[in-house]
Length: 152
Length: 395
Image (cartoon, rainbow over all chains, first blue to last red):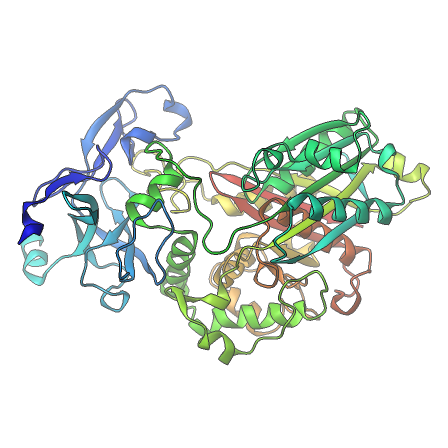
């Protein structure tokens, strides 16, 4: 049970909240209202390049725009588990923000389990770990049937 | 804008030779000078396409190549735009010629590549989207190709067989190209037998990394005439577009698209805008094009380009492929060289290599892979971080 005693830290600060109902942390142009992710890299709206960008929590649920996997371990700076299990990656469309955001899909899903248009929510999952810490990133998780009904 | 003339082209064969990139670059440059019947001493400007994988000499590729050819006081510049570096170097050379700063310019790019995935340089850079996409998501280049291929299947009903048939077609072209790394003919079974890299794409459908070098000697039309070259292959247009906000298409190296919440995206997408630019600059349309060299980093991407360059309507690329239109002998042959699938990518050389191929095609010097009567050709590629590139050639 040593795993559960590890300290959980984001692999990089400022991209998501660490909670059961996790959120991606994006940016919103104060004047135009347009969004960007991650906030730290800003956006490319030529009319608002000097606009202040506020921190904002993005929608938790979106629809899969497309999906794929990486059958081979990605090279550094990705830290691949050994043995490596193919990671699954989805590009997800957020309705309100009208943008598509990449992310791994949580463990336990393969590309066969996914389809374009499928509803997914943001979760936090382990990207890699060492003897003391688990380093976290955001991941997409397909909604359960109950969740879909709740949402409707 | 005025045309410029291509006086000569040259390439070092693509492969995994493991030698210094300068060797490939100078080999290609000497071939191009020989082809142009121009002495190195006559070159007023050398335009190098940068490689970021070969240390400092790669960052100053122009002067590195100039030194290898012999320092003689020639003017020099080096350009980096990822996969679009070669087109950028060509554009810089065109500017020098058309401004009257020089008569003849040599454009050269070469690379020595490592095995495996292209990846960011070492170090921790949490403010670099290229570093972040690898570290936080594991999104390699083939991941983006896989996303687009799956989307194409969903939108237009493209199949695994369609993607594999692109590779089959291009391999048949590459058989006749001595500069291609893989000049072997592949059948569908070979492709299906190769492992999946990023679903739905297999190893033989994704371009590898290669060593190679390419060079072009260009001049003003007047200078060409003074040499007795009255009807050269000409460069009529070059596009080096950035995207227009908001770009709704997820692409490398980004973690997210722009948001279209407050601004409606242009009707013309980023990749479509690249072709549109050269068509307008050259005063021609897609219906006038006889041959194209496009960046098939993955076989599925070649199909996207058919539509993005206006050879057919969205969703019709598979028809063009299957009815033979894009094979040599068809209406609009695409990648008669064999494309990146047959070459593997030598980043700074690749956009120049596309120009070399179209020069041979338009000069009717392409041998067994000749597109009969080709007079207008277009190249297209895209460098990550928003560098579109296209060159339109005609004779």
